[in-house]
Image (cartoon, rainbow, N blue to C red):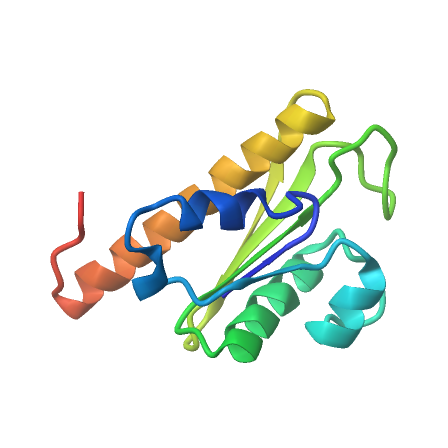
Length: 143
């Protein structure tokens, strides 16, 4: 499951662009408004551009969509600051059921470039998580 904010559906679009995505992608929530993060994904009230919010988004997407893994993406595309964070600040979290890992990124560029970089970065974090899980389970990761 996927919960994305600043990327506005870009990550979901990239995932469903892969042939056979219906076999492994359950869906996404584009929680652009903080109220949606709070009410739909159970993000705790407070700053929505944070490690804590990204973790809650990943866990919320996983729970809401009944997925094995949840990916949460939140941040500031710009041009203005949000929650005291400058444009380009992005938090990505992956919830696996056993654990929730989060990463803070500082991405360059204008609004569109930050959104594109955030999407690519988040999907790379997901890819690395899946590869690590496959290695732990003895499965051979796809190349």
